[in-house]
Image 1 (cartoon, rainbow, N blue to C red):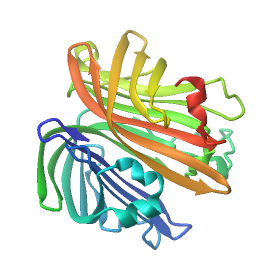
Image 2: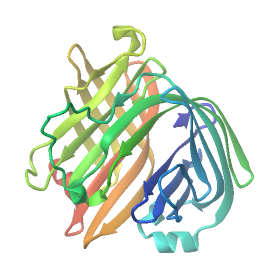
Image 3: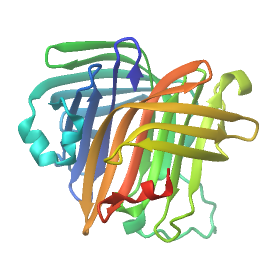
Image 4: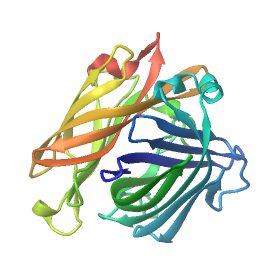
Length: 314
């Protein structure tokens, strides 16, 4: 979410891993002056009855129409968000402040995606859980109102837009060689979300999927599938995206969108000898006369010290 009035952006995540006995809880707030308030925990959970752990709670008020997110805890306030490339030192060397979040989410457009539907007798594809990622994924653009407090600073959100997503099934961050996930709100009447991804087996190939809604073109809140997208990124010396440009193609239109990544925090996940880097960049988007915000989330496996997706100029 991002609110142009108060200048605050952020995202929150809860990933339940009931078979492993814990949840992954993340709070990330992009403060207007460039600092980032960040917290990550693996609180213990029993079963899979709620998304409520470590002070973070997700409530479904009305499915796909109204949701609520609250947090009561602390965040590590990073004057240099890139410190989080080494999380142990970042949490040790930066101040921690109390933080509360109380946000109400209301649907802007219909949800996209969902759990695949199977008829009796269908041949269901066998999926190796170790290679699974974001099964039954849904995404939905939302309007966001509420309050966020970090230390003595308090932010009132009244015109924020954002995106809510949800997945079922196992998730291993090492299951995908690289991807670029873009969430784009250009006001309440135009938005899209898409993923461009590549695999280790076919390093020069790319897969594109996503959706777009454009009320001026399609009316009400109907979305249409993204048929193709081309992305170019401007990186700095540490392979952090500073700006990007994406051309999105649907069945009946083409959209040329430019992004300015104004705050980025790097996250790291390690498993079975692999190191995965996920950069979360709060981005200002423009398309013609329209302006908005969203995320540029870039995931890469790190090989020989280099994020693999950057080798393809994406």
